[in-house]
Length: 219
Image 1: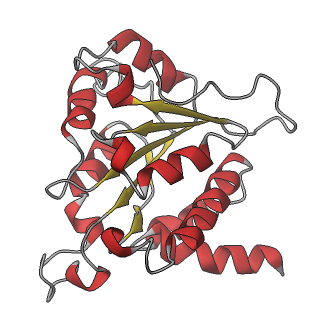
Image 2 (image 1 turned 135 degrees about the vertical axis):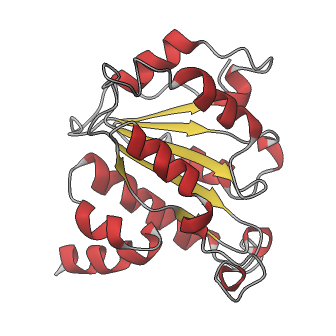
């Protein structure tokens, strides 16, 4: 049972691209970042939001249903907190089971070719902790290279992560609202084919690419 309602039956503007967001947070009721992002996303036309922990409380993932969801969408997004420099466990289980040989990769595994993919994540540490001379020694994009290679192997168009650093203090410091606004702009731009994908791919994070593109489109 999904914790979020189904999307509206009618849409004002038919979307160009269909977006699938796979939300993975084991304690969403306590989430200050991922829950507001999920609630905002479910109001965007053309977006399908799947709460994996709510849908699979016993971790018994329906592989056929998940593969059909992938086939029905053009942009795939993992929405999650950063756990031990990766995704929560159920999202890794989802990858292991759903992205099968012959479906997602291999000589005949072309189902995901050309679809966009990226991770939208929250990290507890400040951005300065994610660099060579920082506490974590690697950038966030470097730490997520397993996801980047997953996308490469599956023939997907990989975009850098969309990040909120210092997530534990984002609400009290008043940084969440702007992040949600950027998130909504990103979803709409992807849906309507307004995002400069090659430029975004070269950025270390999607956040750094969004401001420039939004300003240019507003000119």
